[in-house]
Structure formats: structure tokens, C-alpha cells
Length: 117
Length: 109
Figure 1 (tube, rainbow over the protein chains, first blue to last red):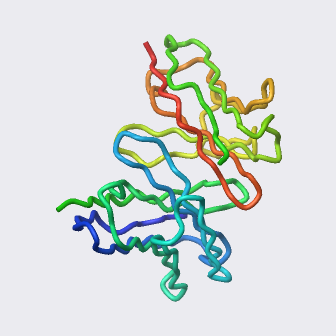
Figure 2 (spheres, rainbow over the protein chains, first blue to last red):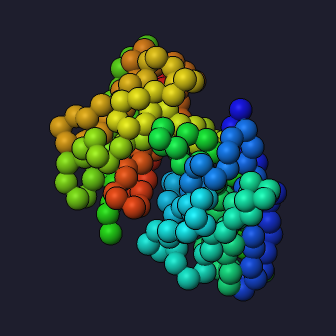
Figure 3 (cartoon, chains in turn red, yellow):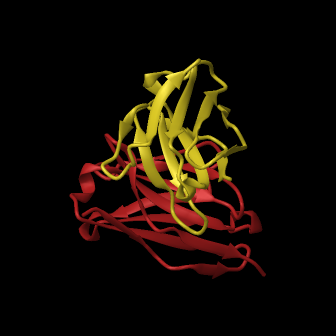
């Protein structure tokens, strides 16, 4: 069965960087795009963008350009989200979600990134 | 920037019926926006319920249905159960990007 397993919680200082991983299993990784979604504490879901796992081409939603980078390691069926120059407002749970013909059908469990001095 | 609007909160009695809607700032929602609906309970990841307006996943309870209603996407719950109390989000596709609605907190009381 399809599984997306994300890396564990992170506590970072302002200005640092963080890299969140999303390891896929149960399907051919390069056949489905991967989306990234942010959820700040007590807030709604926010679409960050997606990466074409076949070509490696990322597409970033408005507000997620510059400090946010999507990448892949197809040899281990893993997608990554890297955030640089972290700010307190980046504190959130970050989700990966597989893009299929049936929409965002499978989600990772989420990774909490806390930015605090 | 495109804004997708949902009712902030709704309350329904157990066994009742409730309809949640999802509106687009760009105009009427159509099947070309491929409306998706998700359920999220506290501390959990979102769970997909509906895709492409009306299609259910294999795990979606029969009491959930999707539609287009008055220029909006809609999610109807018929015969609401206590376990349906949750936050519900819609997602609309706009060409190469997607936008989530702000969510509807559904209370079963």
C-alpha cells in the first residue's frame, strides 16, 4: 500500500536551515508528483507547491519562492523540502502529499518544524 | 491572489444533513477546478474524501457526497455521525497551482 513517511520534528534557531524528508513506498515514485503543504499552529492548510518526480522540476506557489526548495533523491524514493533563513513564522507542520489522478490521495504524517531562539 | 472561501463553522445534529461549500474569488467553481475535499481531526494529517468534484475514495463513507451547487463546490454529509466532527478543507485546481479553502469546523451537537 502507498505510504509516505516523513522525518521527525525539528527545533531550529532563526536564520538556520532545515531539510524535511518524505520517503515513499508501495508505488513507483517517479510516476506521481509530490506536493508540499504547510499548516501553521491553529491555522488552515496552505499549498506550497509541487515537484515533478519524473523531471525534478519544482513549481512553487505564491509566497513560497526564494527560501523554499523542493528536491528529490529518486534512488531512495524520497522527496525533500528545504527551508533556509528560518523565521519564527515558519513554525508549522509540513506535509507531503502524493499527486494522483485522484487528487491528493495520500499524505505523510507531517513534520513539525519549530523556529525559536 | 486567488482566494477560496468556506464557511468558518457549521453545527449539525447527529443523524442530520449538512452541506459545506467552497467558493472561488475568480468566479464560479467548475469541474475544471477538480474540487477535492479533505477531513482533518486534531493532531492528524488530512484525509482525502472526495476528488474531481464527485468521486469518492475507497475509504470514503457513503454518507459523504460531492457536487457543484450554485457556482460553488459542495460537500454534503447525510446521516451525520459523531465521528464526523472535524475540520473540512476544499482544494481547487487553477491550472498549474492549487489553493486550499480556509476550512470549515463542523460541530456535531
